[in-house]
Length: 205
Image 1 (cartoon, rainbow, N blue to C red):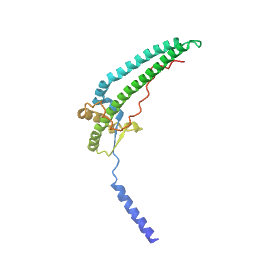
Image 2: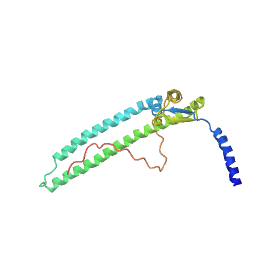
Image 3: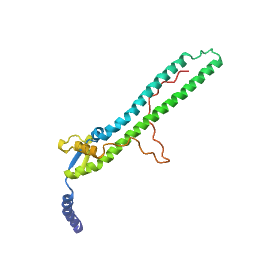
Image 4: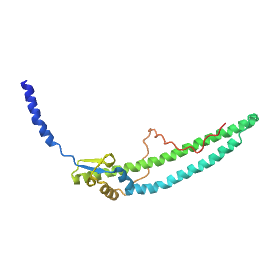
């Protein structure tokens, strides 16, 4: 019993001491989405990536048009059930060739879309990495010990939002970034490409 009372007494003394050592939370918020979208680096990267995106859209439109026309021709020329075997085989060979080229078109679109997405992700990473020391510096200036993304807050006072300050300093420190991601290490499996719209549906047989 005596040992228990001593332990309780020590605990009652130690707890206030530990509590006094914890600093009060001083929070700043950063809207990372706005920080990235409005930064000079992101705008410059978007200008560089736009021709690639436009070319991808043009290629998609071209493939849809050409393959759709070829698909219609195949459907219109499908031999009747009573047609000669040679005619049926010739038509089926055209269908197989169409399917092969349609699959190649899908792969081309997926590859080009994946390249653009990889560039966008690389741009975002560079901007995020460049913003970290700036956020740390502003935190020190304001005596803050916590920085949170504004997107996860419910309400906050405008005075603790440092997004504009971060962007202003980021534009000076990092006005431009590369849109070319570093090469993947040897032996690294490539990421699965995002699905691209099929240029045309396969013809009915």
